[in-house]
Length: 248
Image 1 (cartoon, rainbow, N blue to C red):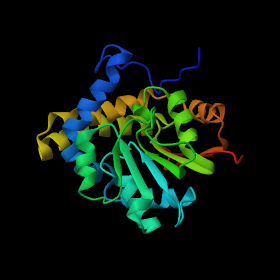
Image 2 (image 1 turned 90 degrees about the horizontal axis):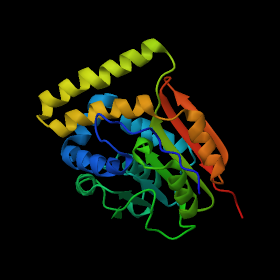
Image 3 (image 1 turned 135 degrees about the horizontal axis):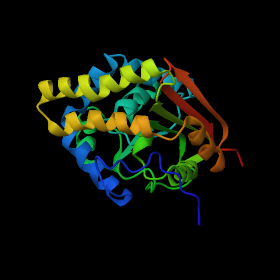
Image 4 (image 1 turned 180 degrees about the vertical axis):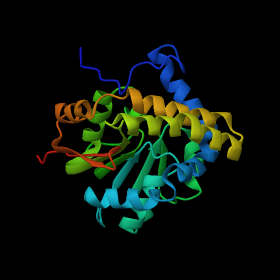
């Protein structure tokens, strides 16, 4: 039997068995979709667009490339990629949430496809780069997802996974937990009146706190055939995982 590596264990406060996770996550994101960009601005204080664009450039995105943005959500990473490439058709967004894709369409004119990272509806050797912005914790199995990412990349293609990691410092971890579990849910409820948006912030922290260690993510990338695997860390909690599909 092939090895399985969920990004985190079952979170019984939200769903009772692993099989229910995808339906829970889908309903949560559909319900919060129209407030998602507002939540994002509260999270990053407006610095998100610049950070995402710079992360893509650090990973090697250049004009003339074609990028697949997995779990594109409202298209935040995809927008940064379009700015770099100068061609909306060079960025394809894929996401399982119809609500999130509707929001993405308001800002993106390029292709948007409904689908999951673990079963990408694209041919092998199609894209020069694959990105995933802060959604690694929501796939059911890292092994399956990374195998799919490698499949759709061209030889020499690069993967960039942006993620929030649990800080090593107890003080930093307490501050982040308080921010996600108390401050952001309160601000979200007051500014949007949305229960799904409020719940999403609490769920975010629990997935961050219970996520597998960065070393595990790096190991799964290597196990699925990627080379040049590394993790870059900013501010102690922003992780950029980069890897390359070998040339034939």
